[in-house]
Length: 425
Image (cartoon, rainbow, N blue to C red):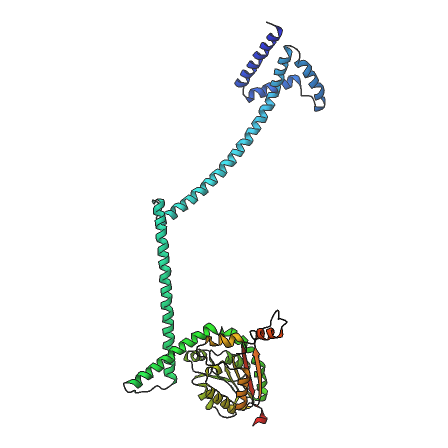
């Protein structure tokens, strides 16, 4: 056997023996060896002397037989330090494992809680033993049941609306019974039938027009804001006709009466619609159920400061209009005024379309025509107030085109104010 082969055999035997000893000996054994070695050999050199030591180690490792033994001894000396490092890493891994186990336990508990909720929900809807097809069928049945309930709710709402209408008509009928004398005895036949039919139609018309106003005219707040433009005239009449009341013909829901009353004027109103009169009385407004022209005829001469009528002239025939204007002039005190507001047919959309939204409208009246009618009734001085005109953003340069377009932007409403001056008497 050559020296190299013998050296290789010795090296292999030493490595096998070292491996066996490492397997049999524990960390405590190597710690003891390390402590003994440290006591015999002293402390390791400082880092500054590692360079020379490494050179000596390299030379020693090349020496036959002694080199492998030296490496084995060096490895044995370093083994406790390495084992201690491994123990530290193992402790860190154990701590990380404990943390992961805690997080896993918390997650498991949360999943168990959610699973319990899902199980309870599934049991409530009856799906715990159903197949996917059964589940789909059940969902479809629930959807059909929900749609049926929606239809039932819609039908109940219709019944509720009809009940409200019936109650409203009954209240209107009772109000008319209390406010006017109906025939105490009627002969059987056509006259009784005609009287009952007329009274029934009036009640239906009252109910219709009350709801019509709610839908198309706007809220009471909107109407009151539009009427603010006339408040300065009310302030001036306190000086020109002091102490005299205001009469509003066709007072409707009472927006103008409330606004005039807030300025300090004494107010009163009259209207043919029993439902609107009921609402005004509920608001503590002095309103009478009856015909406005007939009521005006009963007023003493020179007794009123203001006579107003908002959107009533378009409902009346010509002869009745002239009678109302003349009676208004007679009943007004010197210094008072009459004000009548109506849709403005100068606006093409109003004159051709929106005027006819109200089925009780008769004819639109242009501003010059209404002003002339008031003049014929005695009001020598008039003023026209056009309400809410709109501006053209990009007017065309052509004058003819501009004149046509301007007709679509005219004021939608206007009012003629006729003044009764003292010199007119």
